[in-house]
Figure 1 (tube, rainbow, N blue to C red):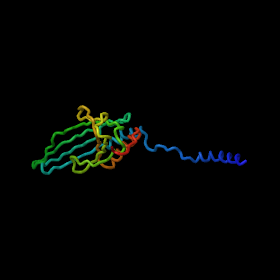
Figure 2: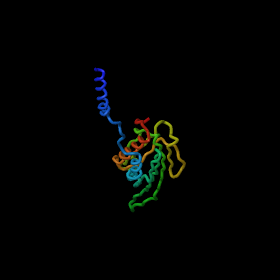
Figure 3: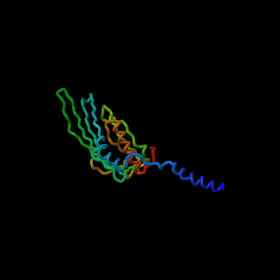
Length: 196
């Protein structure tokens, strides 16, 4: 009788215990398609920086604008083209003279598996600017130059890279871009967090 009562008690409790088990963890956050779409549209619009630097000694003003013209995320590889245009203005007592405009393009292919989530950061960039702008910096894992991640300037031959960056005007814009890139990296199966 005790055995039968114990069996009935266990049989009666099993469904209750099973029903109280926590649900399996779900992945909260944007899907890869949502992340890709945001990076290629709204995110791309944030990937730009204007620089202005005055040089009193040489009486020049250097102005440049850098922006990501195109960006594509396909098969866990990020492709983008950055265009930088600029000119130097010489200031004299007679007035100012604007020098010829220069344009430089950089094409980057970055395999997200070459990154770790912790290697994506937002950093101030003070090169050729009196007021800081920012860059989202992407550092590749390992000490060797990645053969799969490359960069080329002005349609030159692609070369392996150790790091890449995209321009942003503010740290807040940079953090939004960094978060999307981290999300894409995780969705591509990269689980490493630290920089190594």
